[in-house]
Image 1 (tube, rainbow, N blue to C red):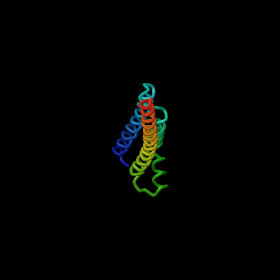
Image 2: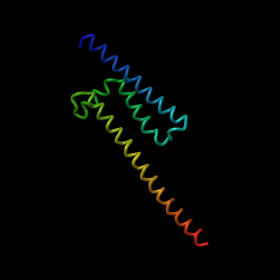
Image 3: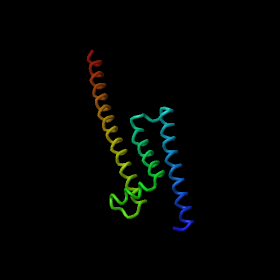
Image 4: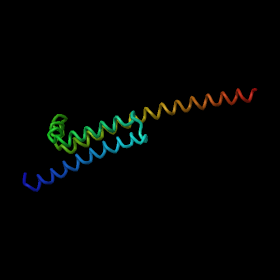
Length: 120
């Protein structure tokens, strides 16, 4: 590996570290301003932490890519990203389903209350 490739890898690693830290700080700021609930932020903070750890210790990505049989370590990074986003999407789908059910129940109760008011 020549010096130019070392410099490029170092730059990419620094950008990844800074990006991961910025993501974590951004999520914490959203929590602080009460724009994001803690229950929804756990997965985002987890993803930011995983990316920070992978950015700090480059060998982990190489080890993971060998473990899962991926020959190109950045492709393993995309696999981790896709799996993390799938968990986040499933979590949001469950939350939306619960909210939809609660909304339906509230609408039914409101209808019953209106009916009772009209009968009186």
